[in-house]
Structures are given as structure tokens and as C-alpha cells.
Length: 91
Picture 1: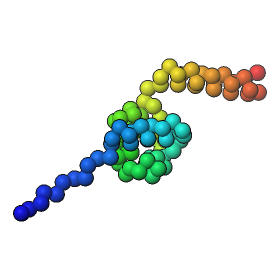
Picture 2 (picture 1 turned 180 degrees about the vertical axis):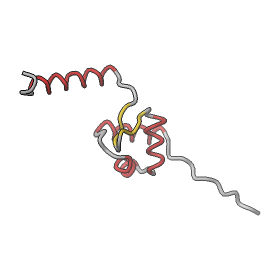
Picture 3 (picture 1 turned 45 degrees about the vertical axis):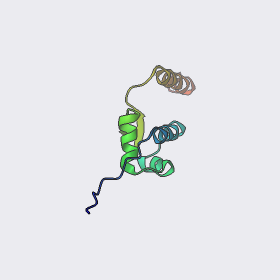
Picture 4 (picture 1 turned 30 degrees about the vertical axis):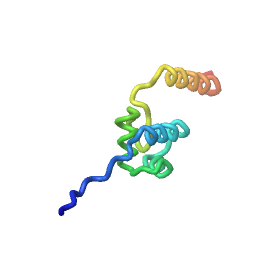
């Protein structure tokens, strides 16, 4: 009897997606390889989770949201205000 060889099942379970999401939230300046090792996924699976499931794109090597949420906009504006207010150039 012939055994049908199938491709291995994907590792894109809800648990893995949440695990990758938590790793990105902890430090979004990690490469896909840096995220895939602790999540226990391959580079390709981690990339698929980031792009398809978490709707993120890779800017250089780092994961960034494709569309900023209102919370992200608020944080970016507050960071800009702090930078401008502490800079000698803008005084």
C-alpha cells in the first residue's frame, strides 16, 4: 500500500499567533528570526503570522503596523512633543 506524503501542517494556530503578537508587543524592533526562535516557528511561518494574521509589514528588518491605531497615533504625537520640547534646536 502506498503512503501519501503530505506537507507538514502549519504552525499558525491561535496560540502561536498570540505568542508572536506578545513578542512583537514586547519589542517590535526584532527581526523575523529573532521572533521565530522563541515562538518555536519557522521563519516563513512567523513571517506569515506577521503579515497575514497580525496585518504587519516589515520595514527593513523590523515589524511595524500597516495602519496606526488611535493609540499608536497618540503615542507618536506624545513622543514627538517630548523630543521637540527637550531639543535646543526648537527653542
